[in-house]
Amino acid sequence: MFGMGWSEIVLISIVALIVVGPKDLPVLFRKVGQFAGKAKGMAREFSRAMNEAADDAGVSDISKTLRAATNPVQTGLDSVKKAATDFTKYDPSSATGKLAEDRAEAAKKINEAAAKRASDRIAAEKAAEAKAAADAQAAKPEPEPAKDSE
Image (cartoon, rainbow, N blue to C red; front, side, top):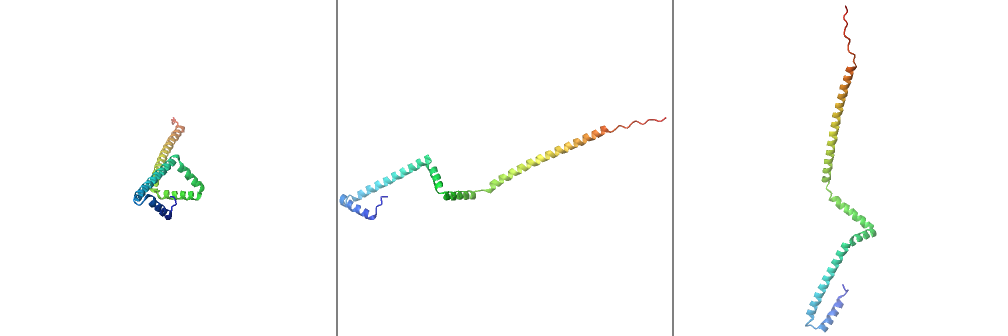
């Protein structure tokens, strides 16, 4: 944190022992430890509050965009990783089952339409045949009655 080595700590301990005295030294260390703990807690809380404020402001989205712009290879790898993860989670039975149901429904509609058209065509052909027969009957000359020869 401050970049202090063991030699600096030993020097500070010796000066504290001389200035404070051996009787009050444990109390001093306890107070310094409590102060350091409070300072770390406040720093953690401040850092957490700043991160929450940054998230609310959308800084994380901006940072992702900047990271993607500066490192396109990593962005591509991330996209491939996401696609692979999505592929492993894919359940083909759900899509195939729905597709099979849709195809079966469409085939049923097609068969019904074809059957209706066929029955309509057969009825039209029978009506045309009946009309042709009636027209042929009407066009036939009636036989003349036979004359009696006397």
